[in-house]
Amino acid sequence: MNDIPISEAESAVMEVLWQASPQTADDIATALEARAWQPATVKTLLNRLLNKGALRAEKDGRRYLYFPVLAREDWVLAESRGLLDRLFGGNITPLVAHFGKHRQLKKKDLAALRKLIDEIGDDK
Image 1 (cartoon, rainbow, N blue to C red):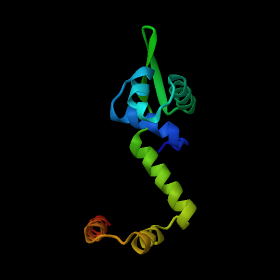
Image 2 (cartoon, rainbow, N blue to C red):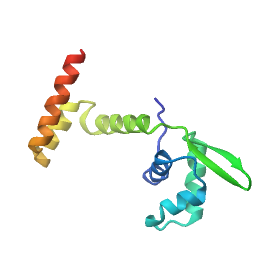
Image 3 (tube, rainbow, N blue to C red):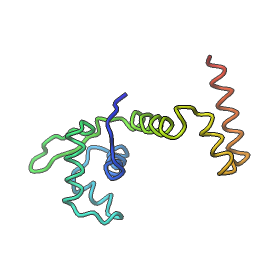
């Protein structure tokens, strides 16, 4: 697993590339136009991600094509582990209890959790 720290803004750029790649900086800026970022902001974020090793770039004429190196699944795993460690001491039970207490888990959610627990138990 790659443990590359990705900021919230950088994750928006990564999401664009995880959905479809390669893309140019202009393509990415267009995909993120709802954020009202200037093209220079997108290029700064791309450079940060390149320096972190989360992306790679290939020259294509006068522009660059960007590809994700960091897999979304690896990033989600690192982020979720970090959240679990910071907020719940690495234990998942208090996390589920927290959502159960404060979010009022729906019957559909509880059924899905039961099914998942049964499947995990069958694998052990």
